[in-house]
Image (cartoon, rainbow, N blue to C red; front, side):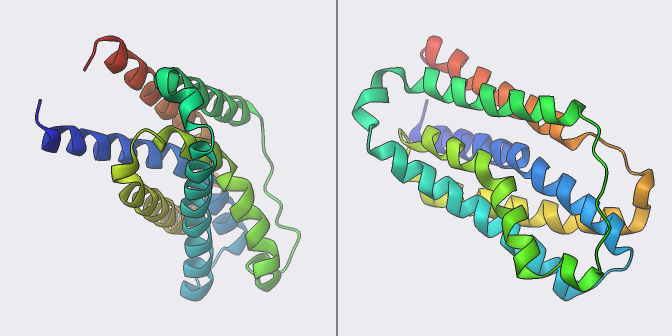
Length: 198
């Protein structure tokens, strides 16, 4: 199998991981859109940028943190990746089954202030921090991976906001469950490919 093909497959996996991680951002953005009720480009772009930026930043921090104990996980990196993605995916599945009520008891301006958005961006990017560790064996694609994950989260946040505004409380898709399934599936893919020597 050519190195070019392997890189393409790695990037494809990164895109799928990025989509899985973006589901938290998407869900929060839909909720924010329901509360906002009206589309404002500056507020939406600010939120989407912060969500995407923190997803990318946390992934990078996780990667560098993983480098400190690279030798410890070198022989079992596939199990580490499988374990982390399964834990993160399981957490998202659990959260997706819980009923959540949108908190709209605030003014629209305060809702999109940096003070309100940064804690949300941090909260939705915690999973990316742990996910960054799985890229330790792939230093050749970490830059692209960070950029892809950040851009996907930015995109899903923007779209989620628009969907929340457009469809309001009629939108009930459990996006966290979808994200959890995606991440667990990628973890299984990594484990199976390593076990088969692919």
